[in-house]
Image 1 (cartoon, rainbow, N blue to C red):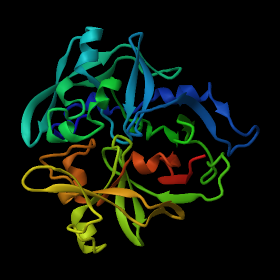
Image 2 (image 1 turned 90 degrees about the vertical axis):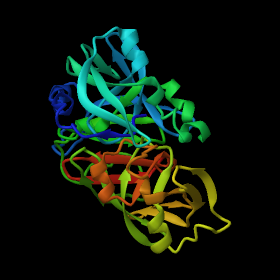
Image 3 (image 1 turned 180 degrees about the vertical axis):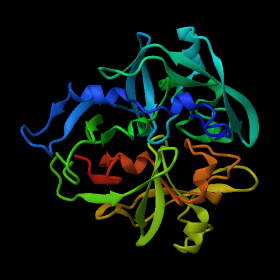
Image 4 (image 1 turned 45 degrees about the vertical axis):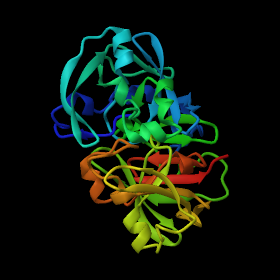
Length: 343
């Protein structure tokens, strides 16, 4: 996965365009409650596939070629591997974006224009643009993380990265990790009436949406509130070491901490279990959380698609080892998440 995109983001404006095609999908969708003006209108549903790490992929067809894309919640940039770009024999153009690895400029990224993109059974707008990610960077396989992490080779099982945040202006995104299903619903519905599945406990969590369409929410970890970003592109859940040390009184030298690896400059990633992580009433017991130094130094970001501007606020990152236990409905217009336990 791509880890560092610095500068020139806005210079590549074609990737940031909203997907107006969703309005057309509504007429072909399914209404979950007939003759009800508050009913949800389903526009798209598809099956996700789970990887060994717990992350999930979705099916896309590019110019008639079936592919699997990693689902990475948030952001507007779509990407494909250089292997796929070569297979499709599409002309590349310079994007103006710069890739950084381990704090070093690894060169500018190209992009390609895909004439036909089909998500599930729905055709997306013609001539969509995708960044081309060098194969050696697809999952940071040239970094220390890739050499030591058991999931480092997973990038070979998917062909690019798809970000559902591109739908934020037009649709709600429903992520049912219990059944591994992704659905899109029209945002034209009554506020608060979105939980169409059976659930004994429902958490309604307000969220902030960053300019990169990433979702930041308040969560409680062992009774203390932190700001956390949702990231389906990360296999683990992470907490800033300073927050662990000074807010939760975690002893980084305690025997119940597992040293995961060194990330350079004498800094280490640790793991430990906490008592509980809760989302307004829906609680995960004994979550395993990685403790990151400085919440991943800006010059070494191995684990998620995060721009520099995001490092200023979220103290936590909620990854798939937690999200896989949940059903999450993202009501973008309401700026609320509806969360239940996965069925």
